[in-house]
Length: 112
View 1: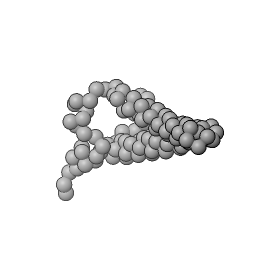
View 2: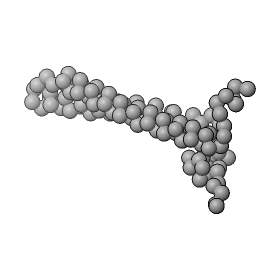
View 3: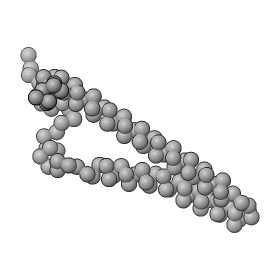
View 4: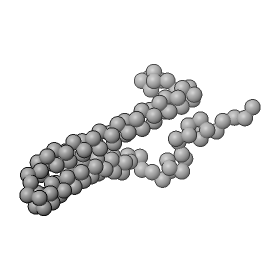
């Protein structure tokens, strides 16, 4: 019977990454925060630009409608990104619990 290696038991664990990555990795949360901000602001500015163009071209007052549309679409984008990040975090937590069960680690052992 073939003995499983550490990488086969816990596929998300990479020895190369652990050696090179800093312990308190701040890059991922900052990237997520930046992505959330951009995903919220781009639809708002695009809708404002379209509303202003329509107002100037056709003499209408649609900029407020497009502003609300921009906020709604930006909120939808942020909701989708946050939901995807939550699913990624829960997958990681589930894999980590499976790994801990396979290696024999228990939560009670940490308290002692």
